[in-house]
Length: 332
Length: 273
Image 1 (cartoon, rainbow over the protein chains, first blue to last red):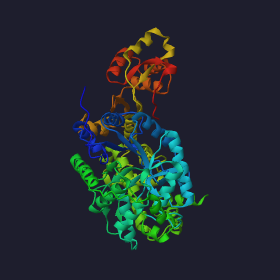
Image 2 (tube, rainbow over the protein chains, first blue to last red):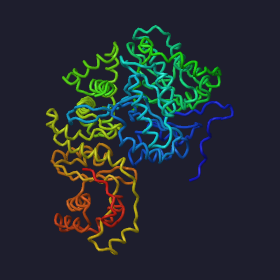
Image 3 (cartoon, helix red, strand yellow):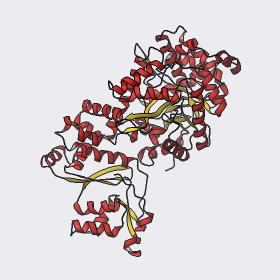
Image 4 (cartoon, rainbow over the protein chains, first blue to last red):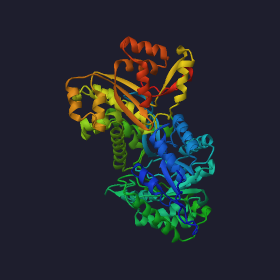
C-alpha cells in the first residue's frame, strides 16, 4: 500500500519542531489520521519486548514520523550502575527504530535491597532524585558515558521534579547539569513543567522566592547550546504538594516559561506530554499548536551562559531548599 | 558503602519495603537523617506512585484474575507483591510473574484453588504477546521427508507454552476474554472440575489459548524441552495410541501453532517455564 506521509508542521517560520507523546489510546488514531507533527515520542521501556504487537505498532509509527525514544528506567544516577540487561534492550531498540533522539532522566531507581525474594538489586520503577553532590555527579557521568559508548551516540538527560530534598548538596541543579553535559558531552532535556513544579513545592516548603523568578533564573543558568529537547506537560496541585502527573493542559505560567526558554535556547524541539487520563488526540494536537504559537511569540533575548552559570556556581543550601521536587512521570 | 549508595538504599527501602514493617521503619528513620524536612508528604507520593504502578501493571497482565477477584482484591495483591517481590528491572511489564505463587499462599483465596493456574495461563499469554517474532516457512516441512526423522523437529509459534491444570483454566480465560465458551458453560466446567491442559501460543500478533488433548500435550511438552520429533511422537502415541500426527500437523499449521520444520540444532523455540 502506498500512502502519503504526514506533512510536518510548517518549517517556514523556523520555529521549533513540535511533537507529542504517543501513548496506547492514540496508537490507532495517529496512524489513521497522520496529523502534521514533526516527531512523536514514546517511552522506550514500553517497547522492550523483542516482538509482538507493540513493536509492530512502533515500526508503523516510525515509518511516518521521526521518533524520540524517552526512557524512564535507565536509572542513570544509581550508585550500583546501569543494568546491563536494560542497556541491551535499549541498544536493540535504538538499532531497530533509528530514533531522532534518545533520552532519560537525572534520577535513580536501582539499588540493593533485602526483600522476600532475598537480597539483590531491585528497581523502584520511579524517578527518584539524586543528591546534587560531587559524588553523585561522578556516578551520573560514569553511567551516562557507559550508555553513550554502548549506543554510540549522545543521549539527552532530563531534569527531574523531586518530592524530597537531600541534605547533602555541593551544587545547585543547573550547575550540576551543566557539569554533567560538560564532562560527558551529553545533551540536556529541559522539562519546563518540572522546573515550575519544583518551584511551587519550594514555596509550599517555606521558600520565599517567587516561583516564576526562580524558574527563569534556572533556565538562564543552563548552557543553551546543550539543550536538545523541551518537555511541556500539566501538573496537579494537591494542596500540600504539587505532583507532575502529566494529566492536564499546560498551565499559563509554564507557557510563559516556555517562551522564555525558547527565547534563550532557540528553536529547540518541543514535546507535549500527557500520560494520565489521556484525552482525545485532538487535545494533544491543540496543545502542540499552542506550543508553535507560543514559540513564535518568544522574546529572543539570550542570556550569556557563562554569566548566568556564574550566578549559580556557589553552592546555596537555601536555594536548594527552595527549588527541588520529583517527577512521577506517572507512566512507567 | 559509599554515601551515595547509603542515600539510595535508604530511599529505596523507605519506598519499597512493606508499610509498617520493621525494615520500612528502619529505612525511613535513616532517610529522615539524610533529607530535609518536610519529607513525609513527598515520601508518601513516591510510595503511592509505586503502588499505583503495580496495580496497573498487574491488572494489565492478569485481566481475568482481576475480573474474578475484583479491583480491591487485585490491588491488595499488587501491593503485597510490589513490596515483597519488587521489580528487578526497569521494565515493569516483566514484573508480576510471582502472582501465581502468591495466589497459592493467600489464605483468603483458598476457596478459589483454580486462580493460581489461571494466573499461570495469563502470564504465559502476557509473555507470548512480546515473544520474538517468527513467521511460517511451509517449504521447510520437506525436511520431514528428506532428513533422518531423528534429526528433525518442529518450529513452534512465539510464546508457545503448556500449562496442565486440575481446572478448566483455558475455558475460563476464553470465556472472560472472548465469550467462547459462554461464561455459564465455563462455570459449569468449573463446577464439574474438568481438568484442562492449556495451550498458549501466538498467531501472528495475537496471543491465544485453548484446551489441548492428551496426545498433543505430550507431543508439545517433549518439543518444548528441545527434544526431537521422534521422542515427541513416541510420547504422544504412548499417551494416546490413536494420535494422528498428520491430521494434527495440518491443524497446527493452520492455527499458526507450528511454523515449520528444522534440524534439531537449528530450532529456536521460546520456552516459558
